[in-house]
Length: 256
Length: 382
Ligand code: SF4
Ligand code: SF4
Image (cartoon, rainbow over all chains, first blue to last red; front, side, top):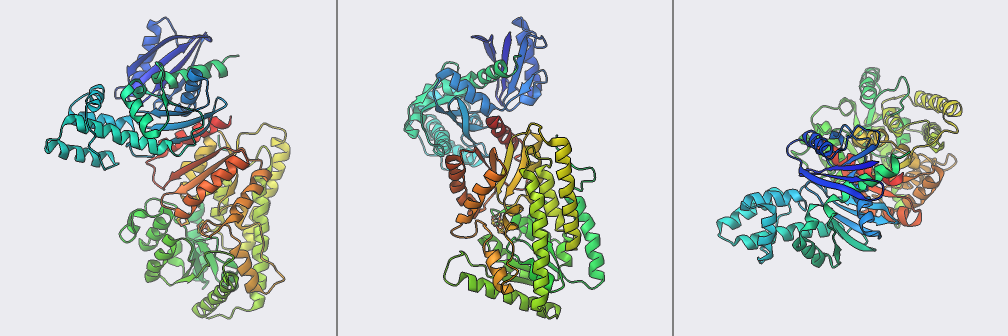
């Protein structure tokens, strides 16, 4: 059997295949402008791995922002449940899971292996990957480079929470000739503070796990851990936590 | 899918039909009193021979009119109510001879000062707490002041006898409403929360109390029979209780959505539920005192302190066999937002029932997010 989790976020589509016992494949593709398109590309990629999404021996759960676009999925489940499930599989401990997504940042409390409480950022994009993307564009660098710049800088405080206003703030600092490193560090601090604000609304009993794309950037995890006052755990499969959770749910709920 | 009765009238249909009925009533010389809140003693309005009509704003379109005068970061309910008043887009406001309001939250009470410039607005000075020195007496005094205001406005004499009749009538209406609400106690529930919510709000557009009582009793009976023959013994979907701010403006976005996504709303612990109806006006007491006592017991977050809401919640969670609580907070509603933490703590820590807070307004801009939150919450329950 192939139990597949497809997590279509706003920037990347993550796919993970679980055979009932172990993880057999995982890959990610950029979401691009349409989640319908990326659902199609995921299907092609799976078929190149010899997996037919329509076969009886394939069960698929789709999750993430673009979950409804996966028209060949057997079930859709929200990213909150999936991230919780995935993180619990990776660490087998009660925890608070922090997922900084492209569009939404989520804080999820896991008790006895299940989600017991969650929060998402509200409408605005401060404290999400979107904020980083906008700012990286402004500085004319890519996100990875933004982080390596930041590591060398002294953060200039960005006072505005709103992405649009923060952007003009950054523009004026650029105009004033402030070093890119310091700006980059300020930008990261701004995201970190926002995430910490949200996380502080949860009681942290158990470990803190960072999932999502940013969990692969040690500098970010480090900064987050400092501000939060808790050790942050990450995992090589952190980015795939949602897809993993989805695959596990398909194995649990769709077998019979 | 949402189960609705065959000849179900949507809120906007009911509202539209109400216009015509109200116009006809006005043509026969009937007086109309507009109101906004569960603290309004409708008994005194009925005793004056006038018909009460609810004017609470529920739509987004009228908000921009209000924002010319009122600050943007104000509760959407207040802005929407005021917006439809000043833009002349609400025929009910237009037909009202007088508005009766109370000093509840700060936003509302300051808004009424502006409303008074457009239309005669009588504001009752609601005490901020129940047990302050003289709270009950002062509220009783406000009952009498309302009687005087209506008497002189409509040039009628309101006798104790009129008042007694009105109290009896409204008590009967309350009982009919509570019986209707209690259908939600059946498991599985044969009625959708969307219908409960709509019926209660649409009832505000019927102007004959006897007719309202009749309709409610009929529907309650139907539902009981329906339960016996079609629902009894069947599996139940997760049972949700709604609490927090009034939900008229988010009926489609939240109330309907919860049920579309797979749960049943079985009870409302906000001011459109049994909370304000369960306890009756004492028919044997001096009427102004009896009214003052009853309305002071309404457990709204504008009261400080407000322990009654927690007690009520506890009873409802048990009686309605609730699996999850969803709280609706309207943007910038401080009183409910501040009470939220206490409520969440009580529900999750003492009753061990999952709790979700949805903070929102009347716009459609957050429907996607609201959807994800509701779905994730329901996944948590299953
Ligand atoms: S929530 Fe409170 S202030 Fe608002 S209408 Fe209900 S009783 Fe009145
Ligand atoms: S919802 Fe809150 S802020 Fe709005 S009118 Fe009612 S009590 Fe006031």
